[in-house]
Length: 381
Ligand SMILES: Cc1ncc(COP(=O)(O)O)c(C=O)c1O
Image (cartoon, rainbow, N blue to C red; front, top):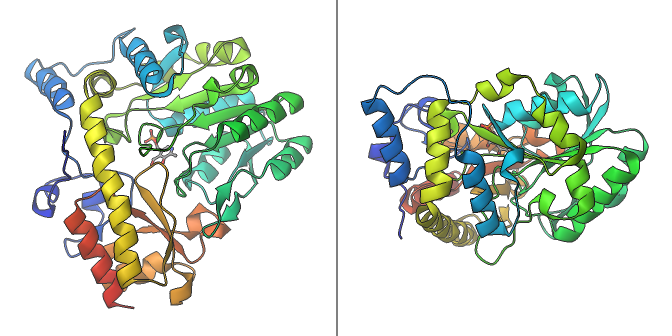
């Protein structure tokens, strides 16, 4: 099934962040929203809900745990116990709620910059303290988890590790070996791993996304997975995320969160997530295939029009982490590009000091939009 991202004139009718933040002369390729039309099964359940004025609270239980478990089994051979799947508002909130239970105020939480920049704030919001353990490697050689530095941080008392897998913004899927190693380290030092897997369904053909809880008994003991249908199916505004455990104390921790944490799931988000995971597999395949073409198209466009810009194709996610340092556009090239080329990328520095001279481009758009964005940027070079 072909799924094509919508053209600009259609997208301009949207009112979400991506389309509201800038004037119409700016091409928005920043926040992680995608430009595909909704999958038909999702559109249908939402239209039905509207027709029935079905706009109340979410019900006490739903099909989503079984549906997610079936999706995880089919896509990743991950056996999820539906009794250990809970829902809440969004992944950001789930990060705060779970970190609050696995750390005490002031205790350290490892993150791996450059990383999804709200991680800095979310750790603080939970009352804990950020411990930065940058990714090893870089754009020339590829990135990896710095196991030695992670062990040091744990030995010095970090109590949790907020993992981003697949990693935003570098688009890496961490390997099974790395994940098994950090699970072993977390067990050795008595720390918990909160694994944010929101981009997991957006893994490219030929790459393997490994869910943390599928890795080993140690991972199942120390880990909590947080995920959602919201990136894959573009449902961020509908507010529904998933928390998964695999036994032990984490099952108790998540299971005993205040009822309000589960209660805050939106009914529309719940319905749309079920329709996504259960009935929209073909649509998702079509989207990933369009994204796959776009990530390759971006490589071609850069090499012909902006050869100074370094790019490493993501293994997952529709995000491209671009190194503009050679162009001399300063620490925050996205600011320069917005002003002069009228293209909005995500600013690099908030992702960590490693983001100086970088910007993040969202390639979940129509190829025509991607071509226009790169030619606008090339024109100011
Ligand atoms: C890694 C990661 N986690 C969480 C989120 C936000 O998820 P939510 O809207 O469910 O809080 C994003 C959004 O882009 C993300 O990239």
